[in-house]
Image (cartoon, rainbow, N blue to C red):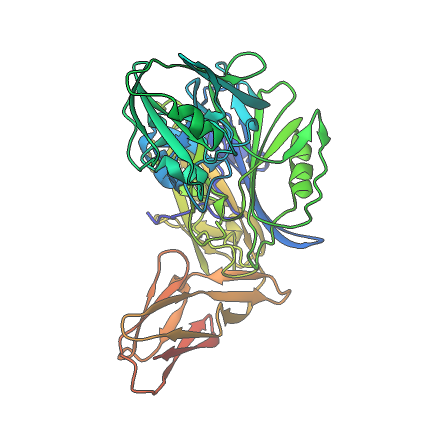
Length: 570
């Protein structure tokens, strides 16, 4: 069975419930076709799209979550407040995660800590650097809301009561005192007041001052201990404390009602009481945002790719319009740009895959995120996830569609059996295609297109368990073109990739599978091998010459149509 590494951008997984076999034969028109929406788990659907709008191309992912289903929300982090790691690493310590995305803006140039409030399992991990923050919050019953959360805290000493600015904040304003505990991590607390020389840190264990210093240093704060860090007037107040003095520290989040079970902060409010909150920023960027229905029982999470040729990104108002159309009554913008990351479980597997295309080229290390978990399934086959095999690289080839195939050519099919929870199951399908004149599927799950153009449904069946995807057989192949006009390899063992794109008489395009391509090239200079994802990998065997450029031409032939790809080594 062939595999994929990422969910395809447009032709995403789709598993459907098929009617009984007898009904299939009697009424084939009742068989649903594959949709662009993927069921990630019961109650969680993902819709990935690539479209052209007035402002240009946009690629995005939209998730709808039924919070009344058996779904739990979990706070993600790099292990401490003042630390960062990519979302794929943050989910590593969590079980049964089926969806995850980045959350708060963070102190990217210094401590790495999230800027806003964070609550996990009902416990305040940190408060907002600015005092209050707007958050994506979930109560103990799983109901979601956009909620403002503040902070209150004091340190009572023998000389009086000191007001605390916040807990584990990444920055202290002038004259303030901050509270830090083991959740902070190992970063020096001096970094929360960079450039300030008048500092004081007091360590308190079991209500008694155990240490005091005017030079805070890096290192973990022991479990059960806290430190107070003050600057200017705050440092002066803390300097009055001596080892052995008793100090009583009290703090709590300020909320309207019960403290949320889970909360992460964002920045700009996008929708309030069912109306868009206008933002003046006209810039288009990659985005991550979350909204909720009026009753808080449905969550909408979106990411939009940006800063790339195939997707320019969205303005804040455009994100708000999308969420409002989905059904959001309230919504909040989370950290975007290179931070935007969305992971989803591939149906029928335990694998979390990145479904958006991060603008940094890979998942950025961030401060925190949110994960959704579901109970394990029973492992009994309930359906098949079926899709054309495709890489996830939406910017590589404009217009290439892996759900298209030319007459007489082939398209490998990805499939996985899943249980009722869309987790892994053990079953092997038999294959059929309808209408039969448009093609057939062999035992290796490769679709062979017939000569009748049009839609064709590829069906996987095992007993009463089924799944399907829809392909389009295009018109006869007219021409082929490599995805790049040329490749430049710097020297021996350097590699690059390419694909071959075909077009029919109407200009409709589709990638040609390597199995349908005959290659001719100088094997002394190059190796050219299928990459397993619909393209080829070219590797240089020769080293570069002294100031010389070695050139070879790769001959590509498909169904009598030829193209050339120039490859330069050195």
